[in-house]
Image 1 (cartoon, rainbow, N blue to C red):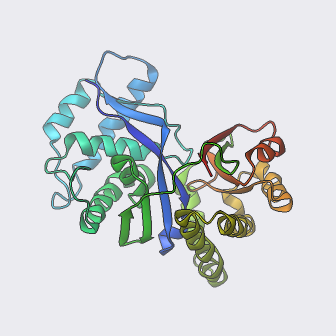
Image 2: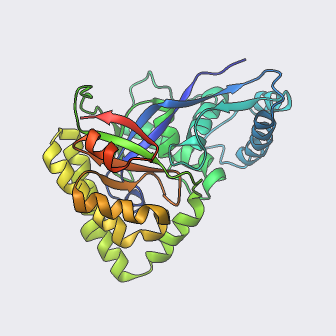
Length: 309
């Protein structure tokens, strides 16, 4: 048995802000993927994955059956037979490794599932998001459900607010374009839960809450609108502001060795960096109007282009 592939995702804009109703934009990233497999693989990875699936299956039994109904007999039998999640998606990198697994389990074991082929009304999207949020909370303690939603639908998702999401189209890539969105590898695995705890602790501070509303969310919303409209000039203006706000107010989420590179980008305008997911490690997202300049300025860093303007 080999299940269908589910892809990684990149939240281009909206990290942390979407917890407080900013806009967000999440796109599938087909470079990484994962699938459920049942074969005679006795590698350490397959055994660890099977153990994790066993715990996950037990956790799913406690979910509200009014929300989602699983075929537990089938799931249990497959787990007992050694099923594992074969994935190239790096864990703790902010590109949705647990999201792809959640999507794969939903796809295979839920009876009366909502499928990609039907008319995806807002109600259906919100129901899927609620189910995925409950399922993925096993991995993170608290999940928005957006990563699995993106992975399951394999479509860009526009978040207008927590209860207003829609599948969307994004401007086509220009393969000849010099502008680019890229990923930088920090070389450190990031943990979501501690980063979200720091954020929630900061939210008790009125100054931080005001900054979030008046600066972070304002620039995030503008970036989403600019990106969807294809207004590149305005997008880079707003991304620079966003990058500045993150450097000033989200320092604990930025790995220390990237503080100077972050600042350098803002000073030279060769590139602007922002968090990819919750931060603390994993990938960092970069935006540049000139990818050759950015590559030269970031020489020695591991850089992957994900989108061309």
